[in-house]
Image (cartoon, rainbow, N blue to C red; front, side):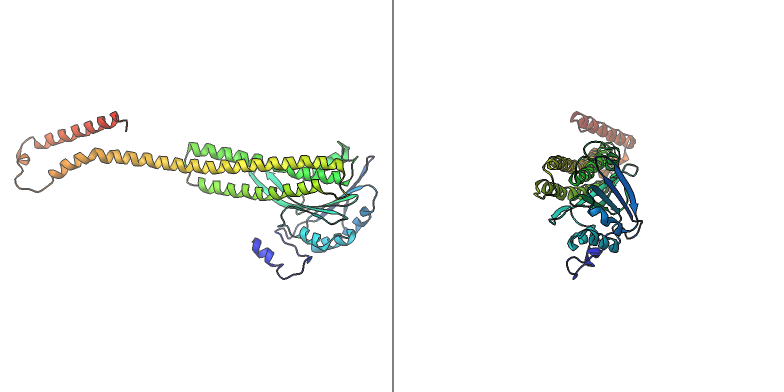
Length: 352
C-alpha cells in the first residue's frame, strides 16, 4: 500500500501537491482561537480565505484544520500565508517522518500523533503538521480528534502561562501534548506485555508467537515514530529562529527529555517481548523434552519385556518350556517382576 501511494509522485516536480494517505474523504473542519492575556475569541470557518486576517492580527492566533485530503484547501492555505510549496507538499504526504524545517519566516514541524484506544487495546496513528509564524500557529490533522482539547481548555480558562506567552509557547504546548499521548500508548503496550508474560507461564498457546510478533511490529512502528521526533524536538530546541524565545526553549528541552524517556521505555518493551518469545520457545522445548522423557522411560521399561516375548515368539520346534504346564503363568510372573524392578531402578535414579 505504501509503495503504491508513493509511486503516484514518481516523475513529478518538487512541490507538486498530491495527497498521499488513506483518509480520502470525511468532514473538514477549520477552527480558530484568537487570544490575548485578557480574553479569547473562538470561531469556526467554512472558507480558508477567512483565515487571512489572522496572519496580521496582533494577538496570538491558533488555526486548527482537521482533514488534509482536500488539495485545494491546502493550496488556499498556502496562498493566504505565503507558505512554501515544499511545505504544503509535506503536509499532504501523510507518510512523512517527523522533522523540523526552517523557512525563515516560519517553522514547519511534522509529528506522529498516537491515539490510544483502551477499549480495543490498540493505538491509532496520524500525522500532525504544525506551522509556527510570527504570531500564529497552524496545526493540521488528518482527522478530527480531541487530543488538543486540554490545550483549548487551558486557553479558555487562562490556566498556566499559555495566554501570557506568544505563539512559540502554544507550539510547545501542542508538541508536549503529542509526546504525552505516547506515554498513554506505552501503558497499553505495557499491559499487553504483562498479560502475554502471564499467559506464557500459565499455558502454551500455539498462537502466542504470532501475537508476540504482531506486538513487536507495533512497538517497532512506535519506535520509528519517536526516534525522528526526538531529533525534531532537539532541533527545535537548538533553533536560532527569532520565532522562538529563549524561555520557551527551556520548556522544549523538557519535552525532549520526555521523548528520550519514551524511547528508553520502548527499548525496554522490545527486550521484554524478545525475552517473552524466548520464554515461550523454551517452555515448548521443555515440554517436548518432558514428553520425550516419558516416552523414553516407557520404551526402556518394555525393552527387556519385549526381548523375552520375542524369544518365546520364535517358532522353534524344540523349546521344552512350551510343553510345561505352568510356563504361561511363570512367564507373566517374570514379566511383572522385570517391570517392577525397572520402575524401582528408575525411581532410585530419580528419573521418575
